[in-house]
Image 1 (cartoon, rainbow over the protein chains, first blue to last red):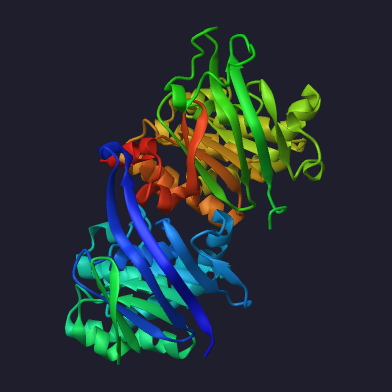
Image 2 (cartoon, rainbow over the protein chains, first blue to last red; image 1 turned 120 degrees about the horizontal axis):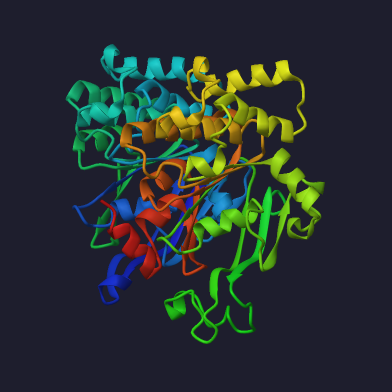
Amino acid sequence: MGKLLEVVNLRKRFEMHILNEKEIHALEQVSFNVDEGEIVGLTGKTGSGKSTLMKCIHRTYLASSGQILYTNGQGQTIDLAAASEHEVIRLRRSEMTYCSQFLEVIPRVPAVDVVASGLVARGRSIEEGRSDASSCFERLSLPKELWDAYPSTFSGGEQQRVNIARAMISRPRFLLVDEPTASLDIRTKDAVIDMLIELKNTGTSIILITHDGHTLRRMADRSLHLEDGRLKEVVYA
Amino acid sequence: MDNNWLLRARNLTKIYGEAAPGVLERTGPKFDSNMDPKTGAVAAVNNISFDLYPGEVLGIVGESGSGKSTLVQLLYFDQDATAGEVHFKPFEDGAVNLFELSNQKKRFVRNHLMGMVYQNPRDGLNFRFSAGGNIAEKLLMAGVFHVGKIRIRGSDLLTHTEVPVKRMDESPARFSGGMQQRVQIAKAIANNPPLLLLDEVTSGLDVSVQAKVLDLIRSLQQDLGISMIVVSHDLGVIRMLTDRTLVLKHGQIVEHGLTDQILQDPQHGYTQLLVSSLL
């Protein structure tokens, strides 16, 4: 297995200029690797820095120092902490996907099109996108009458399934997923887990944040434990 | 990659009043004003440089008076730049500075290769013409003279922008604000431009109409791959439409980045203030 990601001495501080230059230390000297096709879990208490770490990798947050070396599908290594905006956009369009805890709803776009857009953005037709989206919804037991409805009025669990379907549909090479099973019942939870494991089996590498022991045990090859922004231990499954 | 840009702007500058030496150095966010204390000149756009890539949607945010609208008006030749260069790949492969073209060639670029949607539909539409007539005007300027073809293209565009075709021969003065805006968009894209400039297109529309206009813009981008520059003070609009964002203050860029980074991890105090003021 090749190396997909190498995080070296990552540090993240939030400097709040509008609050008298207050500084929040979110991550300190975090280093770890992810291999191709591996599922790595991130655990730790609320506020320990899990989501911050994930967002730094996705470049939603700018790292304060350190390196985030990602090896892309062509075998080139890119430092996500320093890469140009265009390079990051290209990676996001072609191989890296982030699935947050919350769906960012696009007004008046039906659920099926929200999900299909993940494929359309990668150059597939809308019909193809819709058909894949429908089969995703079916597996996630999203009621059929919701498929062409607007997700802004959906419940938390329904929105979460739309969000997960949108992230998975394009079969990204590298998936960052934050609490994918938090508001789901056990049966739907297992459906999400099965789908993520299938993705892994087709070669996707995944970083997973979860508080749910069941999800972690079923999915993660290895998990990293964060405490106050520092990496404390590595637990092998 | 770096040579793959569609539009390259360098040191774009617009000074209202006397462009005396030192105006640019005495204005900007550092001085908390775009007005030169010595001469009273206003540096509305102060040394702005950026690249726009094919198929990209670039957001420009900032409060009123930060220079957002002036910036796109310079690109569309609505105003003359005081200094700076703009290169645009669809015109002579980007070899020439658009600001140095003759007026005739500027008109060519504007009519054939760009589209602009203004905040106020009255700036983009001629209310003495019908909706169809407005689209015909743009097509005529872009060199389409066949009446039948103009008519068909007009009704296609109105269908696409969800304006009832049966009202094609009415003046936009009789349309609602949202409909006027959609006619304006139909007109702006009539010539299939590789670049579309959108200046506060949803301000003043109620939310349901706003959603419809935003959805239209998104689908245009997705279906036609048009590159866009979206000017807005509404961070929600920027979040929905754009990949990258420039933050302007007193005529200068104070921060640029991926849109999600600008909104979730703003680096500059001014952007932090903007984001934390979000409803």
